[in-house]
Image (cartoon, rainbow, N blue to C red; front, side, top):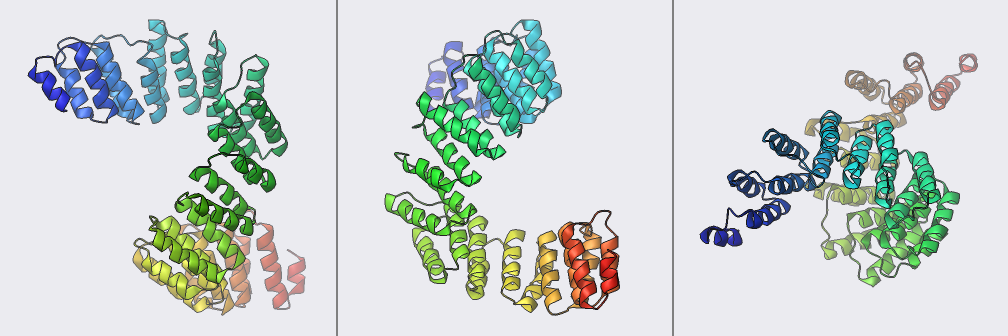
Length: 473
């Protein structure tokens, strides 16, 4: 702003050679009000200044503003060029506005830029991210010379939209056509194998990645760790992680979370200790994984030690970490500590309430669990199928038929009466309370019932000596 003031003082604020870089600077710094004023005050219509403004809007996720600026520029008679079109198309992608995207495509064709590589790539991505993969592929095939950027654009859209088989096929087509993949291609391909759960193909891609010399690329390395961890090949995940020269927080979180996912809790805790020794500072995702590892092993003292350590670390806490603490203490049968962690949470959302309610239920404190439900309701937190199922489970333990009836009425009123978890819990609870007719009614209402519901109904019949009815299900 001081530079702008000096330029105005010396009478240079209307020189396009000066104002255009200034507009670009303001737009990149998100000072769009100043950028727009400079565009409006320009004595001559200038494509560069409008392009800088549109680009700034698009890069900062302001799709609506970018599209409006483009339309205004178009009405003023300024013709878009190969530098402005990608920004406008990116804005359409942000908004997922295929209607405007089609209009922009029409302008692209009229002005003769449809075969420009950058514009063509932007069109391919815009159509794909708006869900039109047929036209996206058609435009991709029409690009005269497709670079690795062109292939990566469509490839990443397939992966992001969970069309992972199509992504793998496209990658093979790219390699067959003689295009050398880059580190972004390889990272995307690893993510596709992760989604497919295909360890065999993942290992082949790993070998190809080493052959191309991308094994030291941090994005590819982290993607490999994530793939092996999620597929369940923990030895390879840890081996790849060990080869990363300077693992960042993403690398540590990925390998620790993978160990926890497959219940290698001792590995997760050892890795966490190594992480601390390396000087890497944990974040909320690290804490969540470590809490789960402690809970999985039922390590009461370590749970408390970790909690104390994290308080001393002054790690920024949020509901994610708070719920992790509640869940950890509950699974270690430390409900007093769980309630303390819950009470200290500045904001208690539905997940937090469910965690403490489930904790009481899991250790047999069923009256306490049920008594929390009206408190939740009064706090205006709401409830979901997990809440209702947990309350019903606790009610079943002390044959609380009144609680069961009230929860049943509430589930009907709130639209949860067709949820499988709620239906199964209602059948089980009514059965354990001796209300066979009520259990039968719930069992007969859904069009389709699963094995759990059938098993619950059979158990209810069997418990009260109605073997014939059980056999007739």
